Figure (spheres, rainbow, N blue to C red):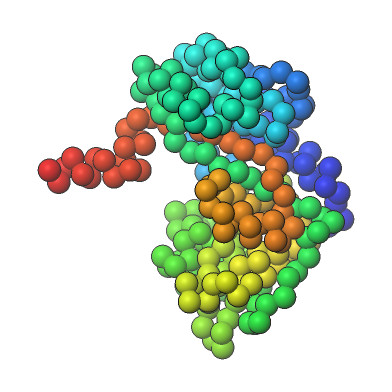
Length: 265
């Protein structure tokens, strides 16, 4: 697929617009935008819509996709701080206080990367790499490959690249068809094989394979996951957008294991 960086960015903003319920150009506006979240069958499959509060920024303004009851509280928060400060502490405590009366808390925060076609290319690896179609990776739905493949959404996993030491799988990059135009890449390498360039070789090879199939690969990691962010950049990916999503306090507690802890007391 011959495509420019600008076309890749446009595709990503069009998808974010579907997810947020806004117009693509809203991400390039000088001022923040507040829109009401709504369901859309074209949204990324793992998103649970409508949002109560979701903040997305491509580096300039913020588009907030919110429920009607949270619109005023979120708008007040966005008007209080510069856009980039809205995604960091101590200001996020202010947002959490505004969300609390509605039973919501900040939950997910992530940075997303898009390929730079001027720098993306398959990187070398000292081990054998194999491109795997779905029928070839069905036996790899195991805990050690949980970033590359998703047991709960097997039907979305469409392509993978494995690294092999002989016949032993030592690294796996997989991608899921999370929406029509974009496939998300995840990567796992066995601990004893890390720091040998395997992750970057797998990620870069898979990204090239995705582009050749007419889709845009994208990569996501937590801001604190320095190793993952370095892998993305080494492969030719560049930071594109950030996203923060609030969920119910009960959901946050369940992710933190609080419900299980209370039951055991």
